[in-house]
Each structure stands twice: as C-alpha cells, then as structure tokens.
Length: 204
Image 1 (cartoon, one colour):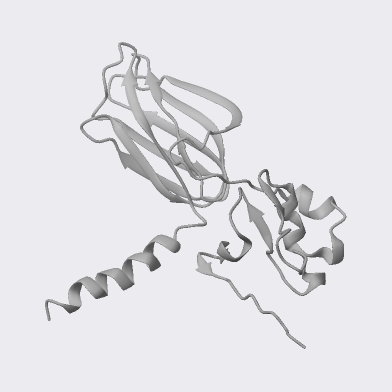
Image 2 (tube, rainbow, N blue to C red):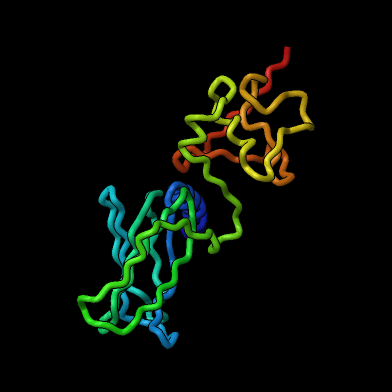
C-alpha cells in the first residue's frame, strides 16, 4: 500500500495544476507609510460580473488572490486605523501579477481610489505569454478564419521552416510553429486547461 501512494499523488497533481491555467492570480504586500507590514490587513477583489474574493494578509503582510477569472477588477486593501485603498486593474488569462499597497493613516470612512484601470505586469513568473484581444480576432483578415493564424502575432513565434508542411490548417497541420527556437513538435496546446494536441501526418 505504501508503494501506491506516491504514484497516486503523481497522477493527481498535474490535473490540479492544469485546471487553473485559465485563471489569474494577484499577490503583493500591504504596508503603512513607514514601510512596516500590516499583518491585520484584508484584501478583496471584485469584478463587474459579480466575482468577489476576500482574503486576509499573512503575518508578513502578504496576500494572495488566486483563481480569478480574467477581466477587470477593483482590488481593495484595508486595515484597522488606516484609510482603505482601491485599485482598478485588468487581469489576463493565466496572469500571475503583483500589486503592493501602501496605506496612509486615516479613519474608517476614508478611502483612496485609483479609478483608471491598469494592466499589471506579470512579474511573478518567468513564463512568456501574450493575449490576443477580441478586436484582433474579429477584425484581422485570417486565412479561412483559423485560430492558429493568430500565432504569428506573438513575439518569438515563426513558421516551422524545418518541415515539408506549413504551419496552417490549409497545409494539413495546425500549430506547426517554432516558439522562441523550440521545435514545433514540442509545443503543447491546452483547451480549458486540458491537453489539446492532435498532430497527424498523412502519407500517400
């Protein structure tokens, strides 16, 4: 029985990790004007669609808002004896962003609000990523309206020159591109967090 436990853990862990690939997360530290951490702070994220999440900071003043659907959010930090601070941000798919707060001393009714929505830097992971917005998908003249033609818009992506087949579906193959020098057959495509890879070569 003891030998089976590591195997079960190995099989379960990847499923948990991939299931969160379409969600974003925000982390950061809450401090006062002197730079001291506020261990009693609470941070909340609220979206226009009604998604709401509230967490308490750790003893080091850090917080983590995980598993947030992509979109625009109002993220607010507050602590007893300090004025609350709210920031409007836009989170992208699979983004791991950082947002630190510096709360001024104030009363319960005081609040500092930054209304202009900003896109946070993805500085919590070394992974590269790009988001193709709805405007590009709707307006660009894509060949036969195929999704993989959008790959050419991403920096570091080029057609696979080391194959007899083109990268587009019209050549009989999808996803045949090199990403930052990586071979096309080493690409991994996910759909809603699940592997979506099917490469076929027809020989006549």
